[in-house]
Length: 216
Ligand code: ADP
Image (cartoon, rainbow, N blue to C red; front, side, top):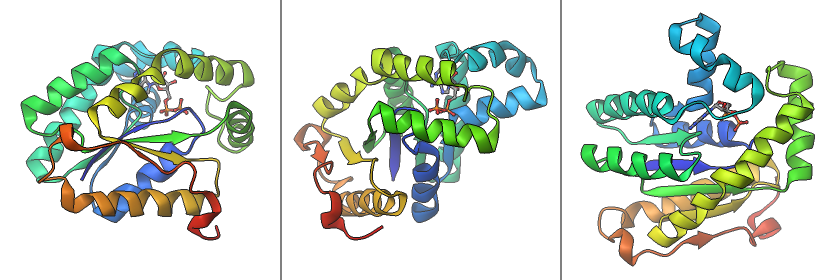
């Protein structure tokens, strides 16, 4: 199973990425975690990206692409799929990632979109700030990250819908229910992946499912 996630900050990419990785036994490639790890270790890459992270700006495309390319090569060598959390974040990254995926025979089977509204996202991120002390979880930087999401990241959702690999889930629901909806959708798709070409697939929209899917 090869999944990439497109979601605003605070929608639960990290949490659900870990759920998907554990369920399918695949690596969870989280670009934000990889970048923060470089910053913490004060590597040359970490020093180059620290200010971008602190401001809530995107780091240069090539830096993330190099990291992700290495992770995909490792996943291929290990014979697994992957769940990619945090990339692509703009259309250039989406296109380049597709080229890299094609060259490795590792393009994504599913683009998972987690949907939530800004008020809820800001509430969640401020609550997290009190616990985790991420340098980019101050209110100004949160607003900057959300604005960037709407401006440059969200438009790629349409691109994946047109490719027929989009699955949309309502991330305003309790975390357990979001996870169950995601795994159910991915499991339902699994038998089709090797047999139905992308061009014959249709986007799947679960955002209206709500409580029909059981209690939290
Ligand atoms: P969030 O989704 O809550 O913003 P992440 O941990 O995914 O958290 O990302 C944190 C920061 O890492 C981003 O604000 C950005 O500076 C940087 N980053 C992560 N992924 C990318 C990417 N694909 N391209 C550019 N910058 C990225």
